[in-house]
Image (cartoon, rainbow, N blue to C red):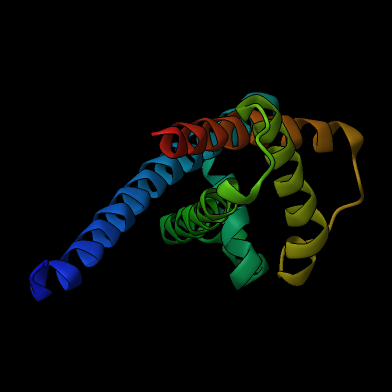
Amino acid sequence: MCPWWAIYSKPENNMSKDSTKLLTAIAWAGLLAGSLDIIAACSLFSIQSGRDPSIVLRFIASGAVGLRALTGGWTMSLLGLFFHFVIAYCWTTLFFLVYPLLPKLNWIVSGVAFGIIIWLIMNFAVLPLTKVMQRPFDLKQALTGTTILILMVGLPVSFLSARFYSK
């Protein structure tokens, strides 16, 4: 017969350890995906336009603040960076939680699909609800944005999710 404390302590400890491992995996994956995504977006913007990449961060902040964020200084850039990482962590968390329910696809297929889904939902559901100035659809920008999301968010998060759940 097992003592009463063994019955009550082990499941909580295992559950706590599993939760801690999951949160740690999400934290690292979100940091990686968010960093890769914002570096790619700012670099591409700067290369294509020759302008200050912090404009990208202020554009993100404009989703909540409105057009005045575009003329704001470093505080608006930091706010945009904060919002960017909140969004990156939301997507990362969602993928980690949904991953065990997905059919067992190759992590590359899952990552590509995830990047496409992120682009579609962000551009057709989330952004229209914000204060971001709406622009007409541009196929080249859509393909570029989708590619960045696939390479910088979808694939890394999918790879890390597959690795986490295979252990």
